[in-house]
Length: 254
Image 1 (cartoon, rainbow, N blue to C red):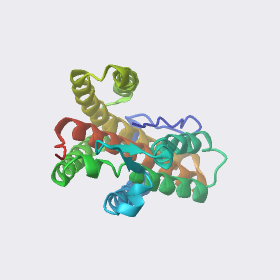
Image 2 (image 1 turned 135 degrees about the horizontal axis):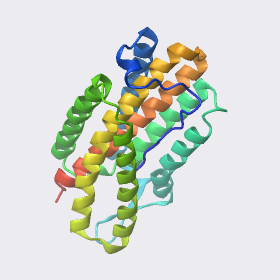
Image 3 (image 1 turned 45 degrees about the horizontal axis):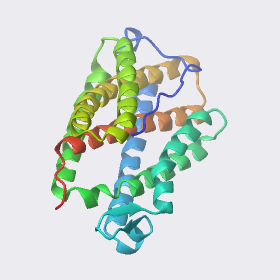
Image 4 (image 1 turned 45 degrees about the vertical axis):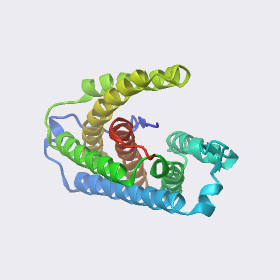
């Protein structure tokens, strides 16, 4: 599970009252954010299906034990943890990387993430994967619209959700040793609530950043980088929401 709270402190963030009237620059910014998010989801889906349906490629990631269980190979472990490194690289290198370099890293990250998630098509039935994906898309869409249109400031709400996210990460690490089904179920329920709320919070925050671009004359290069990082934030919200729903409602293959 990955998430990102990009530091936008160098850029103007208009408060909720000022941002009720969103100008052309802000609308273009948000359109760019969602466009890159959808492109990244498409890239991840393509590589996930490609590896899950190609035995030769799949053998590079997993080896089958005598009991029939799949065990990650060395490359499999690298692919599993590489997305975390990409998120950190993009976040920490935001000021130094150019817009094309940041975009390339984002798309490469989406491809690696798709490969790392190819296992879900082997563990869960295709019907449950599609169903949970559709449910995540619907919930994400509703909350993104709410975050974009609401006049209520969600900043304090976002702080609570961030603390909830930290709690989820800690609980998941603990449960790696406890292996408690009940705890796993509880984590998934809380995870759905947290990432649903973060979708609204992050959308509002990005809208306010877009509104701020109209006031401070941000360069085209920086605007593109902000759009890519915004897309990464929403991509992670959606991806984690989908995975939490799959943990709750996904039907495993026999």
